[in-house]
Length: 115
Image (cartoon, rainbow, N blue to C red; front, side, top):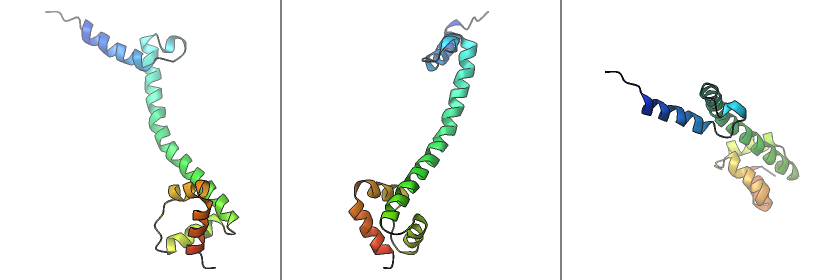
């Protein structure tokens, strides 16, 4: 008996075309082109999830460094002192304090750095 695969194949193709919505031209209408665009998009998404982590860590470093320089030290000296002390705080929290609560940040700096 011959099987035409109409329903299953159409459902598979429509899934790909749904994911390609928003692309320009035949990238969202032509199945064979949409498959390539989907593959590329998934590859970029995988790669950029890693890049996002890098970018945020860079941003946190810049913010901590700017606030540390206002307190009369540098990022390097501050992070060295934090790592030597028993103070547990990651860069994300420090950067948030540097932006939103500069007095709290200054208190941390004065606590971990010998005056």
